[in-house]
Each structure stands twice: as C-alpha cells, then as structure tokens.
Length: 142
Image (tube, rainbow, N blue to C red; front, side, top):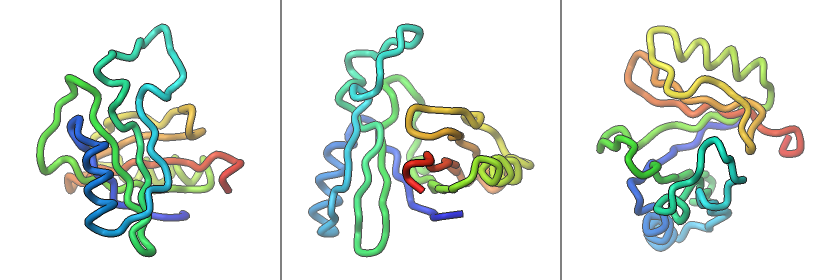
C-alpha cells in the first residue's frame, strides 16, 4: 500500500472549497480536474451543469495530501457522508484483496473497474460506515 488520504466530497461548491482550504491552510493546489475535462462518452453524456464541478482536486497541506471532489448533479448528498478515505495502491491484485476485505460486511458503492485515471478503482463502505476509495496507481505513476 502506498498511502491513505482524507477525501472530501462537496455538493457543487468544490471550486470554492479548493480556494477556501488553499487560503485556510496555505495549501499548495497540485491539480484540479473538472468533470468537463473527462473524455466524452456517448453512452453517458455529461450534463451541462456538471462540467464545471470538480471531479478531483489534490492539495498539499504540509506533508498531507488532501483530496476533494463534487458530487454529480442529482446524486444524493448527505452531510456526514462527505468525508471518505482514498487508498492508493501500486498493485491491482493487492487492490482487489483490500477491496474484498473492506467489502466484508459492508456495501459496494462502485465495483472495482478500470477508469481513465486508474487500472482499478472502486468505492466501498465498510461495516463501520467508513467509505473508502480504492485506487490502483497507473504504471507510469509508480
């Protein structure tokens, strides 16, 4: 396993949150990707109101990586469910193993699958109600 990061989920105000945490903590903004930056997929067209929402932001606060994204418009959002933990792993088989263990007694939100940013990414809420984002690093990021 490479690292664990706090991951905040916002409800359409992700860009504002990035600026807020940058100011509050003196954070360095390493990257901000918006949903509109994703490759087009005709099977799942991007709603216009989602294009400026934050798909993923990465801030450096001292030695800590803080991750942040927005929900998609219309997706459920509940205060209390907006803090997750991102797990970055350098091996697909290890990702599957950890995901399976977290899934035991829990609930899969998004099954492990290939995405344009990861060869294996998924989301699972464990039996204690903690939501984990399990992501395998692409080969070029190892």
